[in-house]
Amino acid sequence: MDVLEASQDLGAWRAIFDFGGISIERFYHFVCRADAPTVTLLRELGIADKLRWKPTSMGFFSDGRLNRWGDPLALLRIPGISLITKLRYGLFVLVCSRKNTWPQLEARSAKEWITAWCGKDGYKRFWETLLQYKFYEYADSISAAWIWTRIKRVGSSRKSIMQEELGYLEGGSKTLIDELVAAIEANGGRIHLGSSAQQIVIANDSVVGVQTKTAYFVADHVISTIPMPNIPRLVPDLPAEWRARYEALKTIGICCVVFKLKRSVSPHFWINLDRRSMKFPASSSSPISAMLGS
Image (cartoon, rainbow, N blue to C red):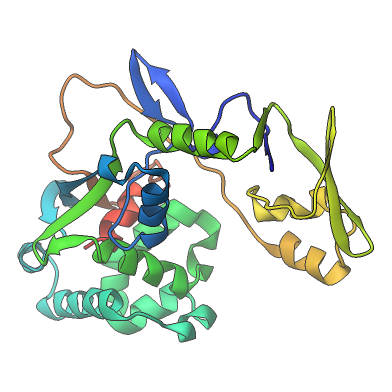
């Protein structure tokens, strides 16, 4: 097995960087109790004992005030919102957390679906800003299935109805990357850094290899982890129908900003925002996930 990594660092989006002597992940990660494949992988690598579960909390910043958020009492105590809107929102999250399958959501937009459950006021108060900050011009067309899976995932990572818990690896993602590298090499695999795939070569409707700038790798199978809209560039021999499907997919680039401060901004792991007047976008995960975890 050959692993091709375009950068000179292992881990791609899970890579780390030095931040004043502290090892920081390029994009932060956490583990939920519903992440069974991740936990299984950690067990296979023999590092499941390095997974730690930590109580976390969230806040809701609204009308210039930081409120506690993420449990039924916090929802009831939030000011300026009608009781019926709170109850509809609470029922919505409860149902989402309990449902195991919901295939009908694939054909619905998140805006339409959330409004049906939470009402127009509930959507505007709790969701509109989050979706617009996260997805910009795509906010109104995001799939309801995407929202539900995130509510389900984070909602299942609760110690109790009043307490959320999230998992992290001792040493961060570097712990996982190091063990993966060791396992790959122990099983005869080879890792090639600075080897950007230029083309996946196909012959007789089958993959035969991968071409980089400096080498050609014979292959019976290829597992791609690049953004899907880039697949047509790598596979020029794709059938027209599949090429159109890949090219129709939209992606949004993100920046994960890290500030080194002398004191904590808040006691919470993440904060949900309800301020359309703010002129900066939310991060890729934390504010939207804060709402989804409640």
